[in-house]
Image (cartoon, rainbow, N blue to C red; front, side):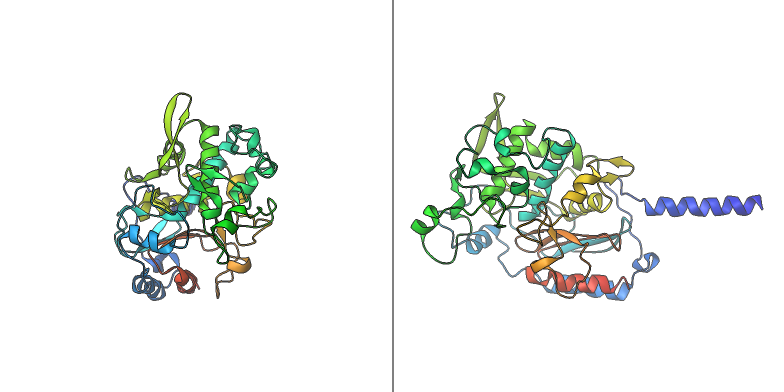
Amino acid sequence: MKSLILSLLLVASVSIQAQGYFPARGTWQVKEASSLGLNQDLLSEAVKFAEANEYSGSKDLRIAILEGFRTEPYHEILGPTKKRGGPAGVIIKDGYIVAQWGDVDRVDMTFSVTKSYLSTMAGLAIDDGLIRSTEDLVGDYVWDGTFNGAHNSTIKWHHLLNQSSAWSGQLFGLYDWADRPPRRGGIDDWRTAKPVEVGTVMEYNDVRVNVLAYSLLNVWRKPLPQVLKERIMDPIGASTTWRWYGGNKAWVNIDGIKMQSVTGGGHSGGGVFINTLDHARFGLLFLNNGKWNGRQLISENWVNAVQQPSEAMESYGYMWWLNRGPRKWKGVEDESIYYAAGFGGNFIVVDKTNNMVVVTRWLEPNKIGEMMQKVLAATK
């Protein structure tokens, strides 16, 4: 009887350990999909689909950027760029790799997936008490004129994080109105237009995102890549190859030290350059509510906060997209799914229901919903 009890305890211990698996630095265990309850054939179909639907833009990302944002006046490349690789990705189930394709160690630009990393810097500032609340006015923390004026003075951290701030002005030589301008009108119309009321409209605007990065730099008083490395990437065992850049005009003096204010994407170059497996570690951290191998790196409160739909856009939280509202993926009914997304088909998808993370690089952007349908079919 005692031997039976010991055997059962051993089995339970192994089961608990398996459910709590976190990959050590430089290694990642691979398991057969079928051993974790997935249909291997259907999962293979999802991988083949990703490989067959490569992003149609140029592999020379300078060309892809200039082509993609050609309607913007004064647009230029101000930060580093890098020619991209081919389709790549990884599917994680219960912490284990169950599928991968392409060169998962290759460092590539990731464009607006960077925004989800930037949001994390705000979450850590909240956790540390550097920012008391997302409902605080940003101008109470950044008093150098960036938030002066009747309009900008009403902007809260909450608005910057969900892209409803309508911040108006110029940052490092870039104007807010020149970023993704309306299809109608011209420069005179755009630059003289009155901004919408703060908090009422979600506008995807990288200048305003970079205002958030600049504001957080003022709060942290040290480069954001350093904060990310020390607080998140090193503890989750990320490689040493990822980088986070800003534009060549985005240098500021903080406490007598010259620091670069990073960008929240690669709209004009810069942003996070990273490999697929490091993305997967970041996604796995959020899948586990901010905890990594027993250590709470970012509060569960913040992980929950990023998933709350904003007042101005039901499909958007704190710089993470939500599978609900007008941007809900067709045929994917689970509204608890949320994801980071970037130009050129870069995605980190967090699927809480199935305890999965899906990272895909250079997938034709409009194919992500169809791909996720195929991934989820393998879970049934």
